[in-house]
Length: 547
Image (cartoon, rainbow, N blue to C red; front, side, top):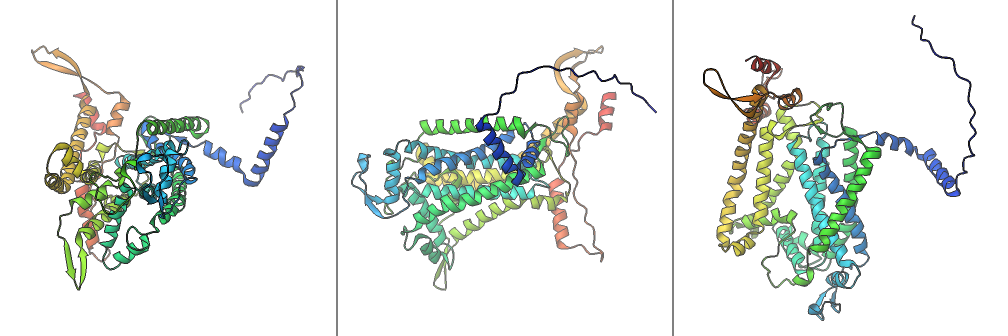
């Protein structure tokens, strides 16, 4: 038995202190209210539990925060705009401050937007804040999804959260399009005309769907009111719910993090939410808000007074949709003419049907990619460490091909502007982009994969032989060699600590048969992992050091 000797307790010392000041009435009321709420909700336990959550400190994780804070700015600025906007297509005569449009017939929606821009104090600033915040919101979601994709942060257990993030991206595009259509100016009217043409190109139900949406022949009388309800009620409600589910799953599944000292699948290294991350997040919110206000103050966007009210008779060249819708507009421009076929007195516009199928298939592949990759690789483990893109060359190449596909369509949306600015024929621009539509993603895939494999080879070489120091030494035999410096243990571990996946092996079932699905899965797995560089093992490093 071990006995620990302790000193006897000293006699208590009495120190006279002045009486503590009695709490103020406000402090007593606040404390009583907090106790009342906590006794009925146990919210203090939730706050304490959330406060212990740790967030990684890598800069790339701020992209998701930028999207969240932009959405908050959208809600705040949009609330202000709703007090002055009239969602009506009733014809009125403009009598506002903007002289060039005085006395012109226009819809009440356009007139109220003009009134908001020129006659409401701060109205134009809030309009531009709202528009710029919407663009930043969608851009931040897109960049955040690219970061998640290229680092493999969508793998188990985050497949569902990736799908929710994709839904957020689609909802954000729908929210942006409905909002951009509300002023009823020439630009938004042309965008609606394009949507109307796509809807009418749907076989059998297209015409009736257009009549239902627009309340009759385009432009109809109800589309603005319908879009307004969708824009301020339906889509924001779904966005808030999806965003809450996304953040909840992020807390439950933990944050991914890049490899480093102390970072494992079971341990997240960073800062706790309370108080450090909360303080940083609050400051970062005001930085994002300030940047949006600064941009809105100095850079005009959507000057509806320049376009004028919508008139379906003129066709205005140079009117471009917001950047996030550009890929759909570009697809329309790349489709060759003459793809209409008449069957049984019905016209089938394959120039509309084909692009609709392609775009839905593209978006569907993006949404389902985590599940497709998990099926191909057979990887059922949990992953909380983000991968370096070079260590997953096929996935990185697929991402580069997808980005190139999107970029070609996006560029096609500005084919007319490229033609006028660079003084080339519009046909030449379209034909070039049509070729890139097919060759661009293929070239991007192979070039990216070769680059990733080359970087892996370089990492392996550095891990085994060190890095070039730039110091030249002459050996006794007269040979000149460059001295290589060896890496420290952490740097070497960072270069070699990744899993080497191999193609799946086909195994017959209990009856000795191999199904077609198994053969397809094995072929895809072989394609996915055929070209790979094995990481340097501990034995390889020891042999290299001995050499």
